[in-house]
Image 1 (tube, rainbow, N blue to C red):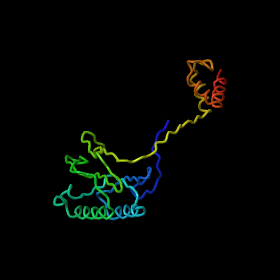
Image 2: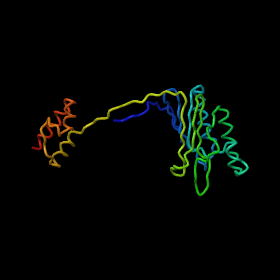
Image 3: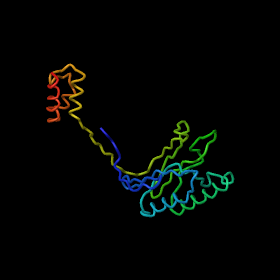
Image 4: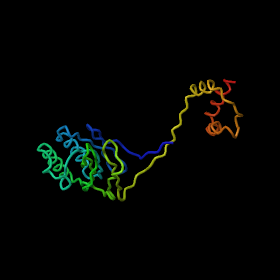
Length: 208
């Protein structure tokens, strides 16, 4: 059994992937701290401006500093320029930053705010950084979307390779139960599927 949220792929540009869930466009973003940020900012700007009236939810390791949470006086000149460029684009796109002063990552003995949650056209509530959990130096971020509906799809994934099944049964030399035995739940399950049960029963008979 496989469960998943119904979604539609919108775009993949560099290290940015956008999907649509219900009426919300969700983006996962990574901006390397060692690369110029202008290109990724233009990519993001193009994607959002293609549908500016949609609901947007973006998150990722952006490696930027935005006031008032990052004091630019502590950044070197290159990082200050990077931070100013990023902040200007986020403001122009009308994106709201969820982050507060809580550090989102811990590396080399110091805490930093590298991971950001951005939104537009919807409401993010109960945003929180979990300091007790980390993955590759990044802390878990939890939040909720207010008044957002989406569909969860349930899909049964069932596929049997009858040849491999026959070879496996013959190789293992199992104890063969009666076809309708109450101790044989797998066969009963296959029996409820009609043709699949008959073919599986034939495979068992070949090993007798």
